Length: 317
Ligand code: TXA
Ligand code: MG
Image 1 (cartoon, rainbow, N blue to C red):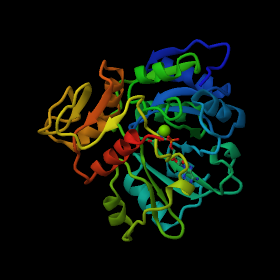
Image 2 (spheres, helix red, strand yellow):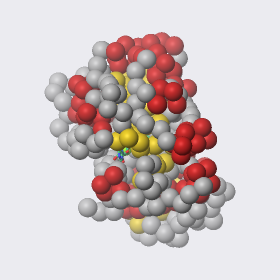
Image 3 (spheres, helix red, strand yellow):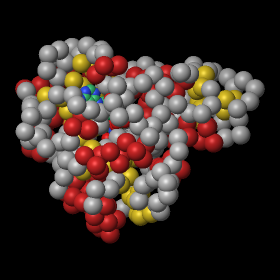
Image 4 (cartoon, rainbow, N blue to C red):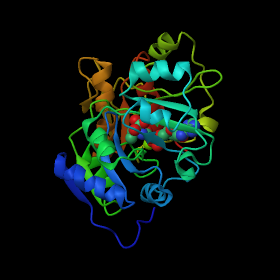
């Protein structure tokens, strides 16, 4: 992907008042800023400003048919943008602020730029928990559209350094608040009609089903969450899954009893593994080995989301 010409200077500032004031200034001026959420670092812009959002797509080199998630400070702000039914309110009250995105009918009068929803009559919306994203939402006073802060199709960033490698020269500012705690993108649920799980994430399907007292169906990701391309999280090297041993020239990412060059969690803890996943894939991609192997991860709780991302990392287009 060709970088925009001329390259701009990318400044990284540690989280704090000065960084947030500067970030709010960039947002106000129609620019985009990389900022951590509890899941991954996001690339945020004013969701009401079409040109600002176009800047996100340009920096990421993202296909423009992919709609973005709108981040807001609280449910009240979300209800000005989307139509909430009983299930939506129950889920918002149970899981916000936090890593749950709801796809809901867009209020026709909402000022969200059409480019954010890719022209759909629904909107993906969430209230993030992270102090940096919350501070930027408060300081800018705008709903912020934010995909993960990485070039389209590459591994999601869980550290400021990942963002810098991927988007250096394409964005003006990165706010660095250390590694993210969650490590995997938010769970996406579509409501209205049958509730559907569009993307597994940190909040397991069972927890959502308990809250709304109904089963979730699988949803048709390809139509409803076009960002879910099969190879969405691809490292540059081939990835082999369910590996219990290292083959020649492989970098093995272990889990539990399977030890390797690196581990997602030596203790076999799935929460720890989720937080470590993308960082481990980045390290594997940067290693001297020609290929990557990953130990089996149990398919329960957040392990479902880990395996979803691993399958995408292993998929060759
Ligand atoms: O944790 C996260 O969700 C991170 C942080 C930055 O908030 N964001 C993130 O955004 O993962 P992104 O752009 O990488 O993923 C957004 C997903 C895509 O799969 C997209 O297709 C889906 O949300 N999406 C957005 N609007 C939608 C809509 N109206 N209907 C269905 N899917 C939608
Ligand atoms: Mg992404």
